[in-house]
Length: 124
Image (tube, rainbow, N blue to C red; front, side, top):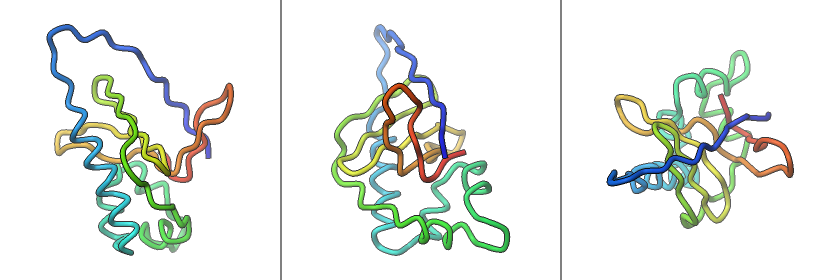
């Protein structure tokens, strides 16, 4: 699956950017997957992502288990632009969106592809 995410450079003057929350969500998402708590990890996905992930007759948790996403590891970098964020972990890149109830995972299991968008195992 390919996801086209355009990272916009945003010049922020005098504004604090919350990079902690997206990082914590990404770490928590991978901690839940590593602990085999796939249903709880599904609860961290954006609705559109959670709806798109499973095949017919399959639960979101079953679909996540099949993907076998590796451990995320430590946070390497966080980029936030508006309501979008990218968290690079040692073993994964995750894209998030900030909704009224907080940050949710839009794409995970993402790897950069030269001259193309990221290739993601989970995306909307």
